[in-house]
Amino acid sequence: MAQGANLTADELWAKLEAAKDSKSLLKKHLTKTLFDSNKDKVSKFKGTLADCMRSGCMNPDSGVGIYASDPDAYTTFAEVLDPVIKDYHKVDSLNHPKPDFGDVDNLGFGDLDPSGELIVSTRVRVGRSHASYGFPPVLTKEDRVEMERKTVAALETLKGELAGEYNPLTGMTADKQKQLTDDHFLFNDSDRFLREAGGYNDWPTGRGIFFSSNKKFLVWVNEEDHLRFISMQMGGNLGEVYTRLVKAIKALESSGLEFAKKDNLGYLTFCPSNLGTTLRASVHIKIPKLAAQPDFKEFCDKLNIQARGIHGEHTESVGGVYDISNKRRLGLTEIQALQEMRTGVEE
Ligand code: ARG
Image 1 (tube, rainbow, N blue to C red):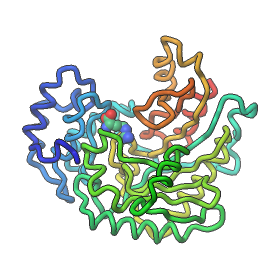
Image 2 (image 1 turned 180 degrees about the vertical axis):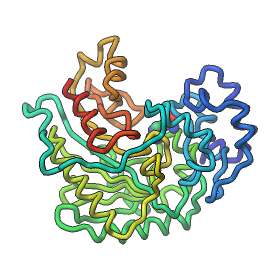
Image 3 (image 1 turned 90 degrees about the vertical axis):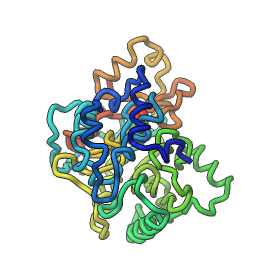
């Protein structure tokens, strides 16, 4: 249960104010004036500023510190969210281009590591939100169940290599859950940032994972976002992984689901860090010596890439293997976001 669930906007503000050392983007951009003029607003989905700021106030060590309560929060609380979005994605103004996945039949690259010595695995994901539902802080148990049902109906229309089976978390054996988590397929309920944002309310109801039969395409249902489409495989063949994902996105876009979008922000996601293309392309790569250099963080920042541990965000590296991905998702096209990651990994 989220500890801050019952705190009012003023109580949350007091916590943020007391957190003098917080380096979050919420702390940096939410002034008292902005707080006061926004704290009583309510979005079309009944989301409040308290819903958006709860996680960042309860976790002052957040990097971002704010989530959108629902798709309309990006309009209702634009004064608060826009500066955070610009800062995170390193853009001066909010103009997101139309989707452009590039020419997947002529990408001009395939395997980033033909030797097979450095790259352990490759993964590309995007997030999507159902246009007619809010995000975790405003969702009910019934909403989650309904969204799951609509999602599964769409997933059942997938054909060929993408066709597969949905596995709800409810009723899944502990053994199966552990195996899937160890193999980097499944998510769990251990992220304290997401928990405070309401991301684990009614856990595990309405959550699950869809697999294609070769397990190279999967869909997370009601993890952080309503939907996460994931393409992954062992080795470094980014071309294959990306092409599969693009096919899946196109197929699911024509399956009757309507996704939340906004002109200047692209696809809308729960966390402002994922807006725009929502695309995160990553490799698990063995770089023990490079990562031990004192300027490794600077090196990554310069290339707009991010290094994480291999068990997901906020985890440590194991044996010098790092998860390297593009950091920016907004203000560039899908193929450009992918190319930023490719350039960074090649470097
Ligand atoms: N809210 C967390 C923070 O501010 C996570 C932000 C980005 N990660 C994510 N999974 N949305 O540090």
